[in-house]
Length: 82
Image (cartoon, rainbow, N blue to C red; front, side, top):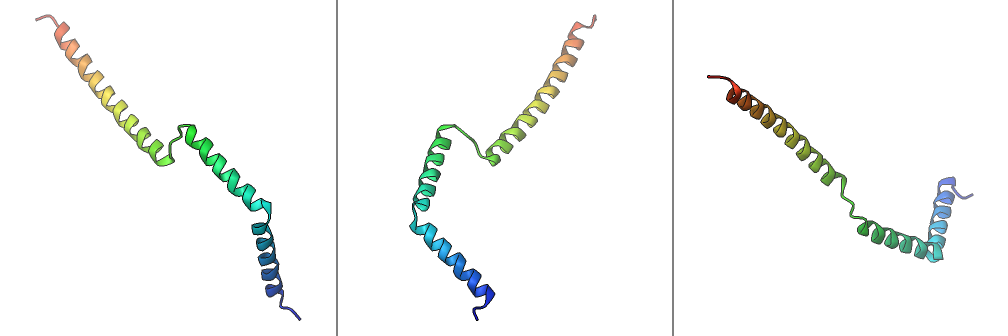
């Protein structure tokens, strides 16, 4: 009697072989190529690049806020009567 695990493994191998030899494999490769080409035209960024830019923006906004406070303080000093 055939071992149940061997039977399942044989079935998986046969299905994999069948799919590899069928047009489905070609269709999958063509779809992947088409999607990669489409995504390359969309000017997308990776998550890592996005996170770097978000961090840079956050630090820049904090720096701008600090500089605005300094400007307001200096304008306040310039407007004081002597």
